[in-house]
Image (tube, rainbow, N blue to C red):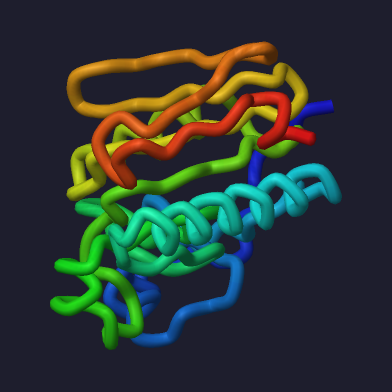
Length: 182
């Protein structure tokens, strides 16, 4: 059964600025509503930890620097979001590293799609990230064993048996889809 995210609070008085100032844990600000991020499964959480670790180890070993985060707040052009995994370049870390909320999308973000997520919503969120400063977004579909990598110029699908790689950020990173989703 597929369900939509739970609406926690709807108020014309609770603005995006309110969300930025008083970050409610695990709640995104979407279209004037606080939406609880729900539907996380053990598999979802494991993939989130794996991807965070892989990106962190790669940025360290390659000397590219920056920071890798999980469930970290950012502000897009329209909403307040918490990407599942995000990478902040050294340049943006210097500029915004002490902010409570990143005032734009992360250059590289990943969303691990939960069983309760609607495909249209996840794709719209990826597009929103790209319109708000992100250069690359990964959509990870654990049940289908797909990873979709989106940039402004391309949409690439990697499936079981293939190797997914970054296109613009964390240059040179790659991992077999099956290893990421194991």
